[in-house]
Image (cartoon, rainbow, N blue to C red; front, side, top):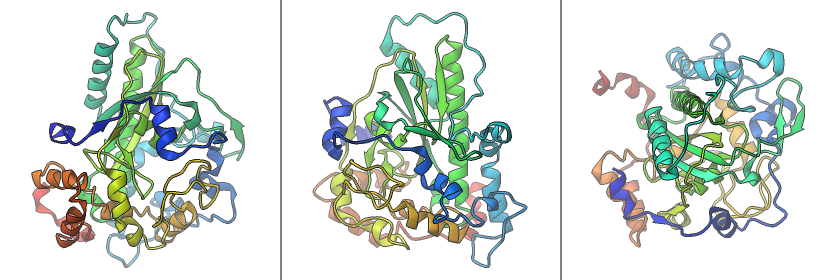
Length: 399
């Protein structure tokens, strides 16, 4: 599949840091983001961000089924089960230490490294092996960048003590292996429901396994590695640096193989690797034409105008010129539903099943002067229409 896209993907022959500086107008006074201000962490300490029953509903003893389709006992049971291992592993030290591994803290499940290091005579060959292993462990795409400290959180937040302490990763971990975890396309068509929330949970479950298994593989080779999901750093700019996609109007990474319907995991390491270059395949130009995510957002949290350097609130970084979702409006809508939304993923014209040849043609049209035609076809063929949860359950093609 990727061979089809490669002719439409343009590698950028520029240092990734310089590329991001230019593309996003990053100001010299840009400051690292404090993890405490992430909207999910703000729900723990900021009275203006009230989570109500949102987090509690992920314990099946607390869920409240609704009359709306996609929110019954089956749907919540499936969604919560999809999160089970991510929650159990992530919160195994919460009572004692207040950590939520994968979301506020990186993972600590690796066993001690080999006392001997595998000699690396050919860095390119080493990189190919690491990428091959990552895909075997569950990654759909893999890219490598040098660690840019601007994206490492300035502070680590403890949800139990509500303390935020200055944070850095070890300086010798110079590389980040960025892992794209594709989410289920058919489930994405049912957003937003409790059922479709399983798409997110399943994605994190694969990310948990992929990142930790890859980190263990690297430690088995005698090198250091830290496995991470949403914790530790901002993943999207690092994924852009690693050549895995472009930034979309909805504030999500858009990849050439899976669109925005993905999760991102990562491994920080000191094993010598060859870094990738940022790429472009027409996303910015298409998003300048398309407004479907902004139009489809029920609470108008997605901006319609030009990228701005000033975020709507302090749950986003300042000093970087980009489209920024209003996290307060977005999360309030999630809270009202007791599940995540992701309408913006469902309606995005890049959210396609790219195993189908006609969808691969569509993404090529999006990266051409015919992008308006692609948008018209997307609307005409009703790709963004919501699919009923009952239809997903009754789909006989999976039997």
